[in-house]
Image 1 (cartoon, helix red, strand yellow):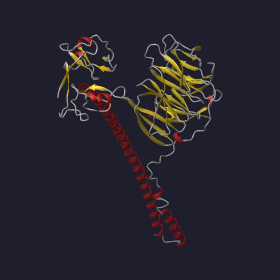
Image 2 (spheres, rainbow, N blue to C red):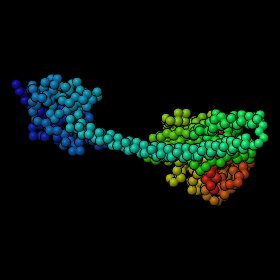
Image 3 (cartoon, rainbow, N blue to C red):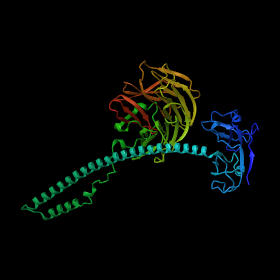
Image 4 (cartoon, one colour):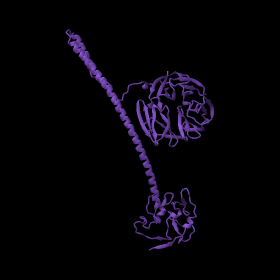
Length: 508
């Protein structure tokens, strides 16, 4: 038995015969003229059903893209394969589905169990289009991740090849050294035997003396005492000046001139941060990932992180602070588990370029924004919170390096002067000019108790100042210093800008 009911518009309540009826996913019907008068959310391209207030997302065609509906409703039992499997009635045409419950075919009776906001009723064609777009977006992300993994693996293979070449080189050197020792041992023993042969061929032989010499020779011939005494351990390196333990003593303004040179490090260890028991390098940083190499207690480890690190600093308890160029945030981590470094974001500084950490009870960090951007800024982070950001002082607004003093004030090195910013607000309280030559200062670092050190272009010394910018003792050198670093145990690392080596000093 079949029953036909005239379909009326849900707004004007007129018959929709010859009025281009349209149906919404919620199964409310309206004529095209009434739908055209509804307000459309332009940002999401959505309209709101006037009856149930359910939001309907439109296609690019707008309301003209909504499915047409017959002007009469046909309600009958059906054995069609596409009928509703629960109520055995004809499914709603055009087909609608619930995107939450994943129900593929719905009839009018099903709508009572699939009401918003718990469920979301959409046209099947629209859902397929949205799903296709989501799949394409995720596929694109997977392609990006796959390329990133390929780049990381290629870099790992390169590093493995370098390590392999280095191992072969060390093996060849070690084998050559052992071979020389073996040949020297062989020559010495053969000469001793020849000497004994000459003595026994003499006409006058002292049997007791010859027995004594023979016994001594046999003792010296013992492989346990001679041959196996050679060092076959490839991992063991001979001690050098670089490996000596340095006396723990913090430098002060009174003792800064009493440093002495204890070692010189090759240029391989430039662009790194020094620890009391090692150093950390960022040896690779591009394509949104970085390779960190860690030397600690005679061991070398390295690990990848999915961050583009542009500058970093390390505290005495192995906490590392770094700038992530990707999202312009200051990151914090710890090197205790050096093979699985995880960073926490502590704050954001726009266009962050360099950072300078003071490792006290509560860590203070001075951050400079990029000098290539207009209106360069200086910021202070105290106890992992951004205290203030102020515009860099000076005619050209250029600050190249900075440090945090023991009283919390920040020293910034501008084009031709030192500028002191207050701890509380970042306002300028002192200015110390020294020449008109730009880019004169290479480096500035704080001292543990009071004051700071700096190096200047063309001067063979490290200058010391107190917290009031008053000049104190100097450390005289026989080379022109560049960047300087000072560890908590009183070891000073100074770059020689002539040969690019790093000179190591300690307090006498």
